[in-house]
Length: 411
Image (cartoon, rainbow, N blue to C red; front, side, top):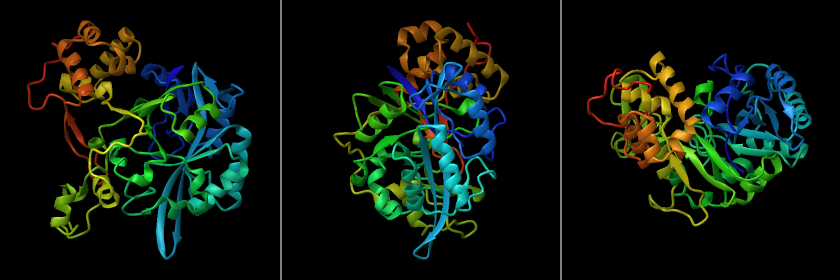
């Protein structure tokens, strides 16, 4: 069975998230997007966990279901700690096969001083290796996946807070780590430049804080819908059953380039080196982004592709394409209305972005919008890269005049 999975999201109990991030709305938006399997996120938070237990139906195979959408129990944990005289801030995803295992994990973290009620993504004072040991001692069927591994401030390889080697982070637990999350600011091709990552399966997830953002990155499988099978596919990097990942154009991510947002300084790595990493306006160090960090650790040239790599496709969310064609913001009521209307015609967002033929697009969409979808599929977009927490901006049609709203009618 072919399906799309988005494992990393947050509930309404995490900071800076929409109050609509509940099970009902997640299931609703998953249907609109065309996602079959969602991570629950935030299972360490007692109120969210209570909602999950009362809302989700146990499938008996490590997955749960609500409203026709399957769920896997997941959480993101922020480890902030010191090691060897240096401070580290590492985000890790934990996947669990049952509520019984979740309860044990939560109890273990609470006993070690974690305030799990403070936020849906809790901060703990445990080293990543110790967190892994605790989780795997509870149940070896759990998965730990380092989250958005290149993000400067909170990640495995973060320029401001991370390590240069996975082994230095997870120590003796490294052999039990078999998947890594690329994050919005990098795609698999960037990660392929590090030979040390070849043995890991690269996954992509939305890290959504609102229902509309789920599926902006995802994973496409062709396997049985059960927890152990999915874990096995990821563990052995099974290319027959893990078909490809869905990716942001990484330039659109918030930390792709270097820079200093407060001063409006956005640099490619070469420019950063020319300025010795200092902002010319305020003199403070700029935030070193993902491209720069990848180049520092890479032992391969750009464009190298390992033999066992999982393919990927770069996409732009359909509402962003509609908004650009209309020349209005994607939160505009007219964009929301027409987005829903086109989904009603085609089925789901991913039916439009991935599956519909050119002929079907030209028949079911206005010509300019169909052209926009096709351009995105071909990678024919212009992007001003994101930097220092600022998302990049994408232009599909460059400086060409945009059609008016009157020209882009629903039918």
